[in-house]
Length: 467
Image 1 (cartoon, one colour):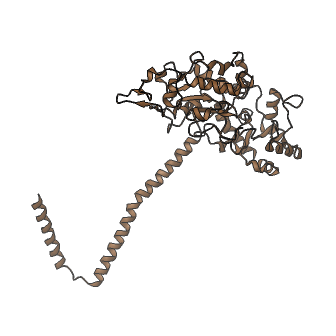
Image 2: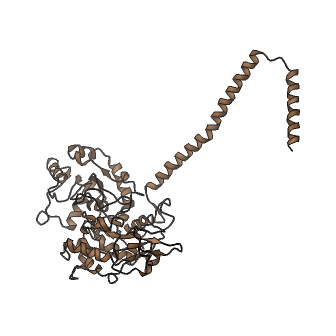
Image 3: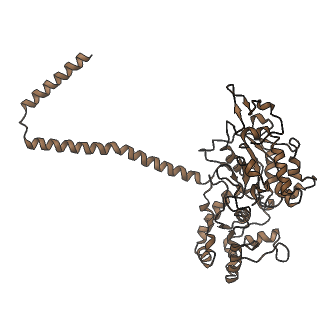
């Protein structure tokens, strides 16, 4: 083989040499032309070498932008909510274990108070009702499992915001009871709490459990409250492990086709904008109330109180809320406010004036298409001038896009094609772990999970030291 190649090469060389010698003599002009031809060929070849790569990069960039665009808003296939497959999977597939109130000593006081006399129906109402609603919906969920060993997540029911408000437990008693409850949960110790879910439905966040930083710093919080602005001057919300959930809008407003108060046509609305909340001594809210006094034909912002006669009751409140094109949403004692979610059900465009607010389901909702966020430092005539400059046609478009996603603010059964629970379950699915560990969890060559004393996981007995 080698010999054949060598002979072939040599024969080619002699043929080339023979042809060259019988041709015209090579001059300096020929040599210069050949050199220029080689250089030109090299340049053109290099350009073509880069062309497919450039085209491929352009194609990839276009595909990336298309993918981003397609993920901005949710899709509805046959009326059913469809989450983007990237990062979530093609369908929901997770199992959640819900601790029974009789299973763990101390859970009942966290749900009904130490005397057991807290009325859960009261806890179900109002903006903090999510602590009860989510529990009840999970009890009836098709994703609920009754086998701890096959669970992806563990839900810990507690209504501590309501229990505390109704004087069922003090903060100190809540803290002691939580520690007692956690010490009886082997699976909490196994994962360091990473697969355990807690609902904290108010601006206080997890601070009702004053030792949360010690014991729940790895657990998943479902909360409407985002970063940095809770009452304790330190946030219990963590962007990477927790899930922002919608506040609890009154059921009489979220009923499909049978809402207590229905939206008005834009042309029938009396005001450009409104703010319908108590001032509570907060700067932004006081500024809006004063601004309304300067522009009473454009902005409705009465100085409301907690009690009559300066209080709007439920029906009256929503009738006022629907009577403006824009609903102004300043922060309260913390960054979130229920009025943001309520505005969608009267089709009033939310204007967020809360710099630190966190909104739910940001993986799939582009809020720039249906809401406005305005700097809290610029509350004044400039805000009203800006809102007045927006054409009604554009406002109608924002309302239409808001109409598409408001179903995600409804705490409805899974039989509904779109609900807050669908959103929460999809967000949880991104957090499913195959493997669970903590600083106090160890494992052997055969996969056996043991504690620091090499006691098999199935033999761990409460009370256990918490991770």
